[in-house]
Amino acid sequence: MRPTVGLCLLAALSVASTPLEATSQVSAQTHIAHVMSGFPGAPNGAALLAVAEADAAMAVEHARLAGSDRTDIGPMVRHARHVLHTLDASAIASGPGSGFGVGPAADAIAQHIELAAQAEGASEGVRQHAAHVATAARAVSARATAMREVANQIVRTSDYVAAFDLVRQLQRLAGQLVSGADSSGDGSIALAEGGLEHVRTHMGLMTSSAAR
Image (cartoon, rainbow, N blue to C red; front, top):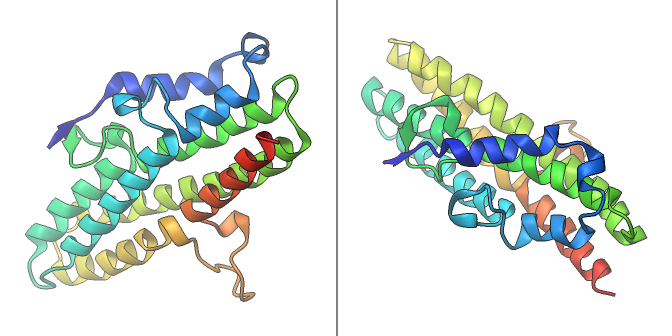
């Protein structure tokens, strides 16, 4: 069980409160690198997208384990707590996640990529794809928030029938962290409905554009 990495979370959250003037001289490539190569505030200095993907995979696994016995509330509650840690390490003292969480990582991705678009000398391609990345990242963050609400309901209930219904909701949402979901029912997954694979796709398009 990994302890919460409080300093990592503080570092990520500080991005939002940093005045634009203080970051205006930071290049677009620096912010892109924080998402794709490494971020000092992330666990072990890992890339923000890699952290989000690893924690999402852990969330999927523990959501699956929560449903291993539909008549035993013990594993449902235990693994729901583990899911909470993978979604936001500040929500629970310890767990199997990185110590950062899908939600904070997705928020930090959106923040850094918007700073990349605002940086002096940012290319048109960077500005264009930054909007796409930020939209998809915020969709991931919103889904992580919805999952936290469901997981907390599981933790609070003592009724295994109700808990198992909630576990199935949790599993469905967990499966959407990477792929996204067609919430509107229009036959396609828009960026505002997207997942981490949409973030990675548009980061790839952005880095290709920035390298030209």
